[in-house]
Amino acid sequence: MTHDDFQIEPVKGLPEKPPEGEVILWQGKPDWWALSKESLNLLWVAGYFVFLAGWRFVAVVDLMPLGQAIWASVPFLFLGAIVCALLIGIAWAQAFYTVYTVTNRRVAMRIGAALTVTLNLPYTQIGAANLDLRKSGTGTIAFDLLGNTQISYLVCWPHVRPWRVSPTQPALRCIHEAEKIAAMISEAAQARVSTPRVERTTGAAPTAVAAE
Image (cartoon, rainbow, N blue to C red):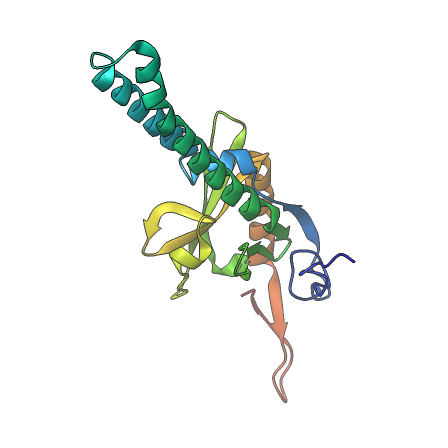
């Protein structure tokens, strides 16, 4: 019998059904390979262990036969392979359990492999969206939040803009068609912010005010 920790979600990636009038425009998740390279610096880590193996070889090649010098360097490569495999596993798990959702009213992020958190970012609380495109074809969209909203960098990592701790900028990391998604968010946000909201007060006619 299989078990799914997210079976209780009424809609995939969202803690509750969208209210009337809210429409899901897009759902996606990070590319795990791009995430391993950008957030976990996989290539740098691999290069570091290759450097250690080369340094070990150069240090001992004059002290022992060539074959022994090579075998003296191999343990660094094995250790590097283990570390890189762990990093890839972390990136894969983070991508697998993540669901990014864009609606006509908000951006929602269900993130976290061990500790699952869902962030709801209404367009009225987003000051700007910053797009970072990569040559690999993926990109990251980071959000400047308005007001006094505080988000933990450690809790949300790696779904944040790197090195922006105060204030933390939540981000859609390493997604495909990032430029297209950014344009979609911009259009939806402009439509949402410009939509008037009608309020009715007791004994008075309905009053139209700016949307929140």
